[in-house]
Amino acid sequence: MKDTSPHEVDTAVRAAYEAFHVGRHVDLSTRASWLEAIADGLARNEAALVAIADRETSLGKPRLESELRRSIFQLELFAGEIRQGEHLDATIDHSDPHWGMGPRPDLRRVNQPVGVVGVFGASNFPFAFSVMGGDSASALAAGCSVVHKAHEAHPDLAEQTAQTVAAALESAGAPPGLFSLVAGRTAGENLVDHPLIKAVGFTGSTAGGRALLQRAQSRPEPIPFYGELGGINAVFVTTAAWQRRRESILKEYVNSFTLGMGQFCTKPGLLFVPATGREELRRLLSEALSGFTPIRLLSSGILEGYERSVTALRDQSEVDVLVEGTFAPQPAPTVLHTTGADVLAQPELLRQEMFGPASLVIEYEDDMKLPDLAGLLEGQLTTTLQTEPDETPTNLLEVLAGISGRVLWNGWPTGVTVSYAQHHGGPYPATTSNTTSVGTAAIRRFLRPVSYQSFPPGLLPEPLRDENPWRVPQRIDGRWDRPGQS
Image (cartoon, rainbow, N blue to C red; front, side, top):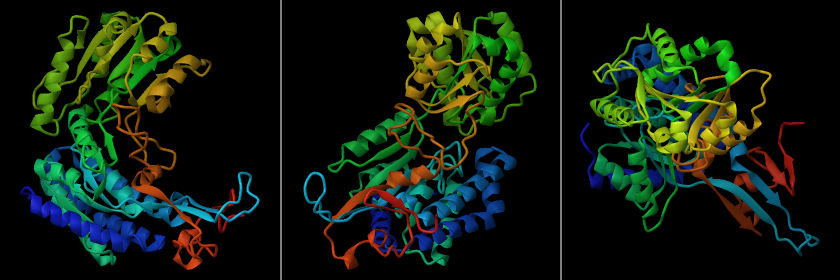
């Protein structure tokens, strides 16, 4: 795929702008049908898309088939969500001459799509966080149009997926230009800079995301930048849990941090365990890793970055090696080791993300120190507590909830289901906002509220009319009315 020129980027964005102004006025059922058409198109082309993805990523057909089904399910879930209309937050305050602070005019508020959204695809999830991943799907669900910047790790897949999406939208009667694809670093910069772009979704590295965040904020009109930049995803094991099931905990830990060759944003990069002794840890980890078969990383660039990050942490005087890995094209996993006392003296040891099959184990002396250790962490996508049913680590949980987007109890963070209550985000540097990029709540990122005061009924948006032609939930004078619900 050749790089997109500045003129071509401008043409794509302007076409998206025209499509937005047509598509924003369709009813919710029609918009939902566009998402379902995309889902059907992806399903029909599954074999061809998976074959291209496997050739470009080597992730294997079972993993890629599962990921594509996830993307299809997500589109169908979003279609059902927007048909219900909850995301509109339609609110009606009728005029009230006796309102407590003086006469109140007729006020009506509804969420409306922001406009054209630029989306940057990720390398590690060629379907779930790429061309028609969560950012693109949620922006379309909100009523926006999308210009997607393809990731260079899988250009052929990006192009074929985009063609599938465009054909599906055309067959469903959507306006031309509602979704388009651009390629190349300069095209990505031009996309963020374009005055008709009103928000950006990004999944990728902290360095790349931070550069784009600054670019989005330095525009004459700054725009929201919804960036997922990464995470360390700390796991804390209590003494009681360690005493009762250390072997199973380490086996599950190994399975989680090596899943997908450690190229998941939710990979557990830190494991806090009670002081056991390095030789015991080395023996247990070596046993847990004995059957692991590595595959190559997604790109040579990722392999180079992986080697740099592991080497930088390994070479710290406070760090030693529990399991010696390799930096071959198919790297064997690396497990590093330090102590709670060392990280209390040097918290930077907990802030080195190693994107690949590596992790750091920290031995601590006393459960009472866990809240202090957790307090050293920066923002996390996830944190996990491995504990026993009779324990109530309230202080630690309070710290974890303060720094995490998702807190797990006796689970492992890899695997992010798409659902209503999901939150995939976290304080910086995990993400650049307080929103989620996974689940139905992701749609609301690309909406903004507008209030209408004292408007003629016929000029109001349909969700704000008293007759409620779209049959959406309305909050009327402080009370919710949900058509079809008793």
